[in-house]
Length: 135
Length: 184
Image (cartoon, rainbow over all chains, first blue to last red; front, side, top):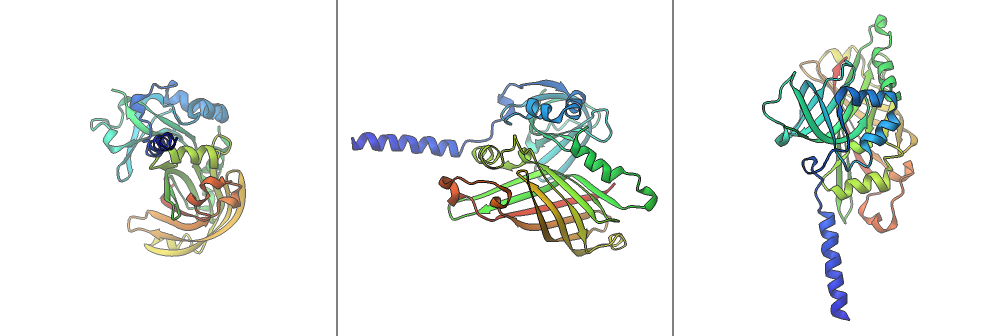
């Protein structure tokens, strides 16, 4: 009986430790829930923010795929690169945050690109994080 | 158009130009919070904070998406969103208030100025009046950095911490706001 209890405790402990140490899901390995252009994505948020949040953000566990033209690339913080996709609205874009290791070295202003990442919602821009390129 | 966008546009682009208003803003400000307990330390960072500051009136506001806070561990981030912040129901936090202690004239020359930030801080759908010290630094190139450090108590914003994890989450959370502001 003691041996059974100890075994259960050890297995439970291992499971809890692995769950605690579980890394963030990578967009590389997950299928996108929605495929959309940057222009359509912004329009959806502008038309009905609550509905768009439910559709594209959800529980933040499934990435979306977005296509667009790079309007701007900026390096705001060490290790982070933002690519802003054009939406046709000069006041708002789709900001795609990359870990610098995931950002293609040959991407530049004006390029048509496709990315996959986790949408966090919209303030002035639609924000997508933990992005990876689709090449 | 979203309510949040309306708010920012109202400050940033209202027809105040006749009065030569000085406005600064960012879309990539940073908010960091840190919870320290003997059991564990928890830190999260949000690098997508939007802010607009109208120097001529002192009015400032910033907003952050709750789901844009990033944690080292996925489990912490999930608990933060689902159990504590209820970010599906309360997807944003924001602050609307004023900055006092620095003038538009002072911002024309490099230096660091002590300021006071007062206003309404809304987290988890609960708004509290706050007043905190801060610093405004004007760099040689004319860019402006605004910094404030303050404490937020989860219970002040109706954030319930289950008894089973109470020893893991501090009663007072240290919050840092860092805004690199550019002239609009």
